[in-house]
Length: 176
Length: 384
Image (cartoon, rainbow over all chains, first blue to last red):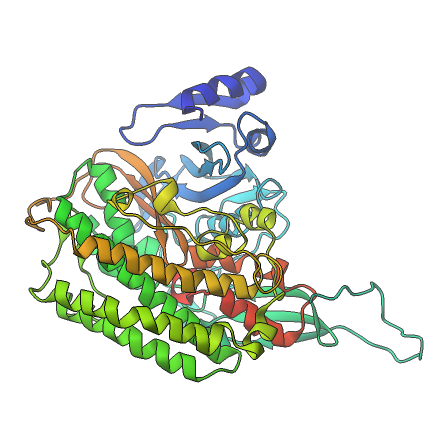
């Protein structure tokens, strides 16, 4: 059993600058912020190191932080420019019974995060979902296609906070 | 009985050319339990690759949740895994209560556990009954649905709905139990115990059933953990892992129950039969929990802790419960307003469908149905 603080110290000693900070300001859950490009090497270390053994990825969620500059255009739709998109990783060790939350943030204009699919196969579909609904690009993912939305969906990424419903899909009027 | 195929077998010794065939199974197919399309790549009758296409029921629950307040989300959670609605509400309520930092009265916890376990039995009955139909046995299906009906009646008398309850609220319940509930539940337990044995005699030890399921679709434990498999499917692979024990929530630590695991009684550990049999054993354990809970249920007011206005502080929580299908997790971010900023659901069915390709490779077409049924997915939750 290791606490998030102890794991933070271990990671900081090995990965240095890639481990950005430990966030403990929130009441329920603490997490560690990590550089989005280095996330897979950190995860791979977390999984195979004998003191940590995080063999199970419980959940992977993409989030639109909605912290950019907000403008409203003529027909009243909100447009967000700048700011970040984030991915949260909830890890668990079934052998050592400890848990950990990681967060990476990436620029909204160029949302690129290293894929952890090679560390946990479980991440495959969750990353496809985050790509599908938020447009986060997972580098080195073997099969990054849409998963829930139609493959030919062109109206953008629904879970982004400035998503606008399309009027037409494949030439058909979309009823509301 | 998986068969390995030699690569590049495009020309056999007799000079007859063979080629790969692609077969679409679904989206309208009785054995996919919903709208799921499987793109099967075949070498003769043997499967070389499977690509599941999902999303036919996608209505973006997560987007809906951002547009309404915390208590309005509950009816939407019902509609994800519509065979285990009670448990979806249960998980959501626990997650929001963690964010708010509130304690609910003991009576509420007991009722939630009773409802959750009744729901587990009802859900497993559907899983087992439809599984039997899928591989050709019709009678067990009728027996299972007859018994499930009794549970649905109990729910209906309690909260007025048979499938989509909106019963478990953040901080409490919408109604207290009706006065005769405890008697009726005790009657149900007495009625149902022998029925499990009946189902065993009828199906579990049936020679044809065993031939169709034993040694089919073996899911090794390391693969299962790597793919994030949970619930009866993980336990079928022989791993004693149940969130009710490992990460206890509500009042589960007050009850005495066992975690059944697959032991490979009819074949290899982690085959379809093991996954099936774990569910049978789990129903008996659920009966034990219900029996202990209804007979020790404390008095109290079930609506006293319901907050007038739900406005959690800024923060995030990942909270999980043991749904009839596996680990149901809610990741909720609060930005301090009355609407959730982000709700992400980790649904067990979604995760379990991801392992299908791994399990199906090398099996015959007829086994697709046996394996898909044993994994027990609900498409409403896969697509959310």
